[in-house]
Length: 235
Image (tube, rainbow, N blue to C red; front, top):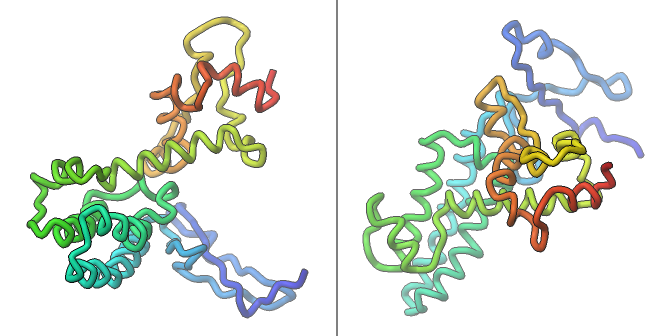
């Protein structure tokens, strides 16, 4: 397979202080590949500082462009249930796209920006002003999980599927505790010791913490990690 250098760009993630790796030149067939500060990968905006401000702003802008759908359908007197289904399909799906990657790493400001879209949507659906105080109660009344709660649920679901996936089991193999003794720790995954908060809030460390918190129910019909070891072919 030949790689088209005209469609290629290089994004360098360099946390070092002197940024020495940013001076490296990358070539394909002796043609230099341009180094960029940000790129769009499968619909997600990624920057060289691995922060999510660009992606959040892009998501908010895209979700705002879909708000007119709710306003128009509200004029046709659709029920709240129907409007919520429209919101989940056209707007919330954008707010949660690839959230397993960036959901835990958001700042308070970034999280507020995404939540504000949901508040405005619920305000259109109910015809009432949604503030920070009545936001959670209104979501419960509408049988709708809050944006933060649903992102956590998506991350947990991803972690459970990951632990049973034949293709991606290697992602969790290094963190399964191997011991012949019967101890409480043998029923848990070894959590990663993180030196930086950013790494601690990334996907794999967050998955390990969530699975350990809900160890009995993390996989349907499984009581301990011994059965996981058998599936992963680990002695």
